[in-house]
Image: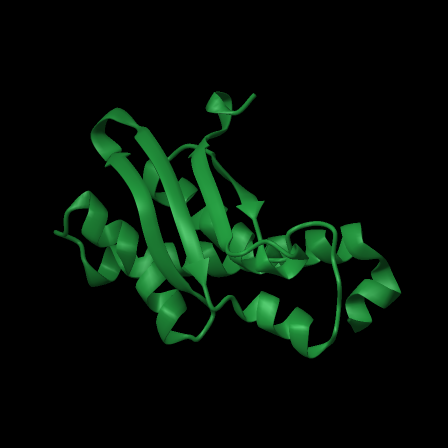
Length: 145
């Protein structure tokens, strides 16, 4: 609330996206160390497991297509219990746009690290702005219109 009031929504969003981005990079490096011989999916899902352990969000994959060798990636993911949504509800903040900014930044950097190419996620629905659930879609930047 304070950052939004001081900086405005767009600048606060940028701050939290960058914060999440840095966190995702650190966890991606850790995931490589924890599962150096794991499959693409095992390594990829280390990030969501770490996020869950930290109490940030629980991840429910709807569709995942990962092929590191060919640079192929598509993810349709539902987020459950987003700490950012819960924070907005606690602060009685109402938004017209999705609010899971740190989580989005994390997903972008974590996935981009593994693929070695820029992956962009978009939050297509968010409980923080009145939708029934939080859901993100991720794919390589050049595949977005």
